Image 1: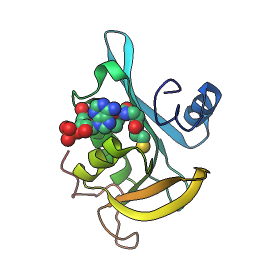
Image 2 (image 1 turned 90 degrees about the horizontal axis):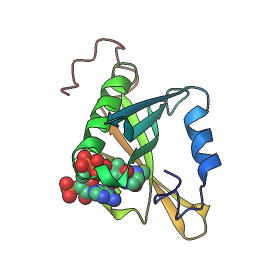
Image 3 (image 1 turned 180 degrees about the vertical axis):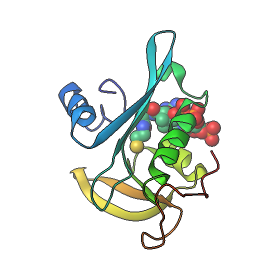
Length: 145
Ligand SMILES: CC(C)(COP(=O)(O)OP(=O)(O)OC[C@H]1O[C@@H](n2cnc3c(N)ncnc32)[C@H](O)[C@@H]1OP(=O)(O)O)[C@@H](O)C(=O)NCCC(=O)NCCS
C-alpha cells in the first residue's frame, strides 16, 4: 500500500498504513495467491459510519483480475449482515477507482474539500440497502453475492 498510489501521492507512508490496519474496531480480510498477499480490504465497524471501507488495495501484479471486486463483495456481505450502509472515501484524482466503485453501485454522498492537502478532495461514496430504522440485523435478504 505504502508504495502505491493513492497513499504514495498523498504522502501516507508505511507507519500510516500499519496504523490503518491495526486500529480498534477494524476488520481486515485478505486474498492470498501462492503465499503472497494479493489484496486486502479493511472495514471499520463502529459509530454512525460503521461499514466504512478504510482501505482497499490490490497489489499491482494482481490488478485487473477481479480480486478488488471479490474483496468488495465480501466486505459488503459482511457489512450488510450488520448495517445497511457501506461508506468509503476516494481521492478525487483516483479516476480508475472512482469508475470501479460506480460500477459496483456506489454513489456520491458528499465531498470533503482539501482533506489530506489543499487541492486534493475526497469523495464520500455510499451503497445502501435501506434506511437504518427499517434495518433488521442478521435478516438481510437483499444481498445477492
Ligand atoms: C482499485 C483496485 C482496488 C481495483 O482492484 P482490481 O483487483 O484491479 O479490480 P478488478 O479486477 O475487480 O476490477 C478492475 C477495475 O478496476 C479499475 N482500476 C482502478 N484502478 C486500477 C489500477 N490501478 N489497475 C487496474 N485496474 C484499475 C479498472 O478500471 C477496472 O475497471 P474495468 O474492468 O471497468 O476496466 C486496485 O486497482 C487498487 O488496489 N488500486 C490502488 C489502490 C486504490 O486506488 N484503492 C482504492 C482507494 S479508495
